[in-house]
Image (cartoon, rainbow, N blue to C red; front, side, top):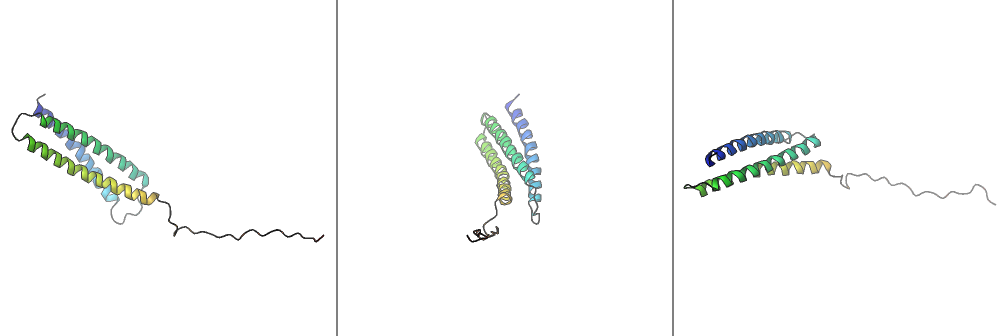
Length: 135
């Protein structure tokens, strides 16, 4: 397969993964949006895992595409590589930001109550038993 055809194929695959990641990103933003106080912790954990996998997949595809472009023997290769890197960085930045936001929400739901929230009941010290009869 010619190098340009390989690049086109990898870009199509990457576009599919980016589309899937964007859909997940939008669902996360919707669920974490204003007024949605009750967010399922299990769903957040699954979403974090899925988003991390998408970032890793996209990173691999980006690297493969940049390697293929770097092998081209034509003018403007450096500019193409630079554009690919900038575009990839922008997409991963947005995905990583939402992962950090989900982790923040998750940490707030998992955090132990503060001392101000804990009510401590003081119990009186035990009293010594007094004998009933005097010898």
